[in-house]
Image (cartoon, rainbow, N blue to C red; front, side, top):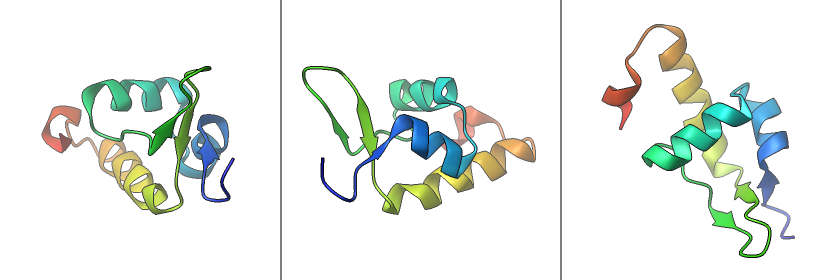
Length: 70
């Protein structure tokens, strides 16, 4: 695993977004993991994606509709 690959669990802790929310955002194209392991299906994020994750968390926290973020 490359140094810049962050597992969904660690990314969840860093951004304070639940893993369930991250999977939903992936499905909707809002926050798609940088890579995905073809064998396991594990999602890997990068440090650069942390800013977007925190922004999404903040906007949702103040009541911004999720569909408007897409």
